[in-house]
Image 1 (cartoon, helix red, strand yellow):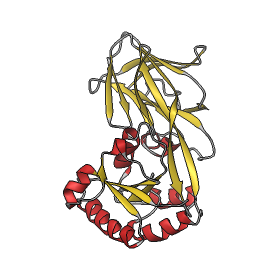
Image 2 (tube, rainbow, N blue to C red; image 1 turned 45 degrees about the vertical axis):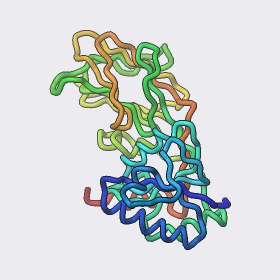
Image 3 (cartoon, helix red, strand yellow; image 1 turned 135 degrees about the horizontal axis):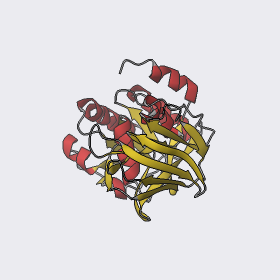
Image 4 (tube, rainbow, N blue to C red; image 1 turned 90 degrees about the vertical axis):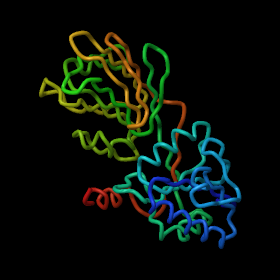
Length: 280
């Protein structure tokens, strides 16, 4: 890949991410690479050259400095773009990250020599009563809108098969990349990145035999918010919240959008071992 321009985005609430951004800009300028800085970050570091909103960034690749929350926000705002994203970890766990700040020069050189892989990650979208409300990279979670109350749910696959029915605190529908996020903490399986599937993870079900299940990414999932339970809230990637009152019907399907990441030397399982032993 001929890297002539890089869009740079950082978590502006993190001093570490901001300082890292300043160091990376200096290195990229030394490499004669055009840097387009996200507007709010540009204000923080007093950058007066090329700057742009995330939604309008046009570059050969996007470099994101921060943790997984920053990455999820950026992928949502890059709604009409499939520009490859390189994630530089400046967060806590960083399951979505690829390199550390110290590895940026080596990473760019590897990318310019085509020594990298592209990982296309399927997103999922949610509708409430047939009106599309949001999409997500990691997961869409349906939870009760009142603490300590439970939902009364019915989960149906492809309009035919009931795969869950009963009371629970909620349910997580996770993509393969989201299998190492909230779904993992809730007892779901880790999905190999070569498998494009969905994981359905019940949250504290009253029926103790209700366990996580893995289904094809092409499946249509219908969730009915039934009476004798609480109203629900849909949460996409922990960032977008939509209300789903009693008797709502939620459908979750594969989105037409994809998020594209640049992957370099480390294997999925090598990164997994590193991140799972971190003290978080």
